[in-house]
Length: 391
Ligand SMILES: Cc1cc2nc3c(=O)[nH]c(=O)nc-3n(C[C@H](O)[C@H](O)[C@H](O)COP(=O)(O)OP(=O)(O)OC[C@H]3O[C@@H](n4cnc5c(N)ncnc54)[C@H](O)[C@@H]3O)c2cc1C
Image (cartoon, rainbow, N blue to C red; front, side, top):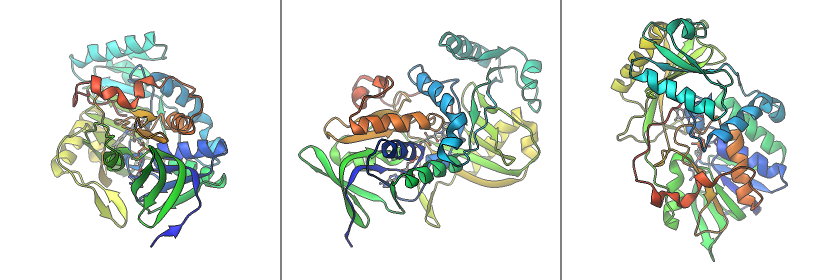
């Protein structure tokens, strides 16, 4: 049962975009790295995602990370040696009611003041110059031309391949069952089939972060709403930018291959993680599917007549302030966590992984991560996070 495995400087748990980009960074800095995932690359949020790469609508603490990420995305495919599907086609955030117009206007004012190139489009004609397929239910929008989207599976796999080429050992289909702590440090990681001795651990396990943190009495307060995702068959070009809306109850983009991928707002309630052919799935309810189609069709009528290719739900790791935790776990000296991305961790993955890697190595951290500290939740009312603007 117990195989021996070479000791690692850092064991990264979770091969979503956060763990995969962190593993690459660690390897580039000369660390011996093991990247473990219970399933494989992009098995959870990083595969379920809409995969918008946006700066617009970001919290002020996250905006510098998003600005930096957008500097990195255009050259990422070349750096990784594999396609990421990144396209910088902008993000339109729509106002569909007279109440939503001032919300969008204020977003543009705040974010322009913060230095983001973002424009307020005050009427339908101006919005249709960017997205002609939109219905006349759209009253106004914000537009950030430097936002975009990418292919999440390609991107995560590209990170993993590059990391492997630099010597990162990958263990997929192997769930971590526990962290062995001695003298206030993690000394080994136990998986379903082995024990890996380690110098440090980086936990990038998304919605499952607390499974490994709870036994250490170091939980992150997380709610885990789900989002319904619909994907059409390949269709004629209808949308270049990513679409969002003022109240985050839908988002949409057209994938590079021509499929439309649309998402609902966050839905709170019971759900379960099933296993389909060895891969994790969450099944959305019929009502949620129907509502998502209606909400999207209201602004994008052509969507309603497309054929549906696949449907799934994705869960979010929503913290009380909708910001991630990127920090050492206070009581365990060499354990770093990067989780709680609250529905917007894909676009900033090329930055958050390397930041987490720096923290795990005890190296200088290049950006201000004080808003993402582990211990901040004692000051924040629980369960009060606003719904996040994904897309
Ligand atoms: C429907 C939806 C739409 C979204 N839209 C956007 C968007 O437009 N833009 C944006 O920026 N973000 C978006 N997000 C959020 C974004 O996708 C996530 O924040 C991001 O992908 C999180 O990446 P991660 O690597 O932190 O976590 P994950 O991708 O969830 O990776 C965690 C990994 O850890 C593994 N794991 C967990 N527990 C264990 C264990 N015990 N042992 C071994 N492995 C384990 C899992 O198998 C998984 O692969 C969206 C999310 C969803 C669900």
